[in-house]
Length: 143
Image (cartoon, rainbow, N blue to C red; front, side, top):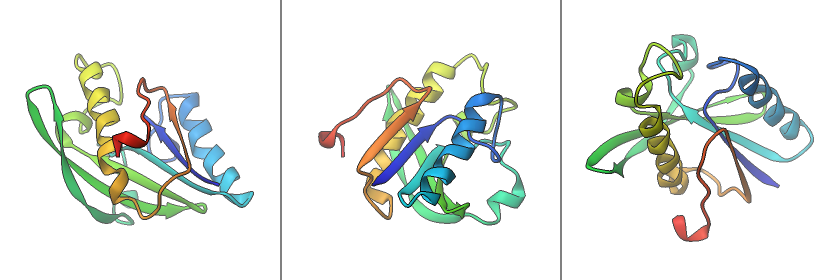
């Protein structure tokens, strides 16, 4: 099965708590069991330069959110048998902290819409997608 995990954090890239531990370990375990796993998360300012240097750029799109027409870049790297996709937007993700910003609702609404927007840019089409700590669901008509 081809599984895409969508999350707001995953170790070792960015972490505030247990969610990052789970999303940093579950996809590699699933991949080790024979399924194809990928994770998509924001490219936060906290993602180290060492990880950024290993990333490959796939392209960009624009995401409409209310009156904003925002850039969204797509990067990836392979680690522990998993493809890790990162969504880039400095307005929303280049912050001093992952959470606790006045506009967190807007930031993660953007992230949710951006995930759907970049699905056609992925190198494969997931059979199953699971969103972790995000309030958005989509179906085939969304992409």
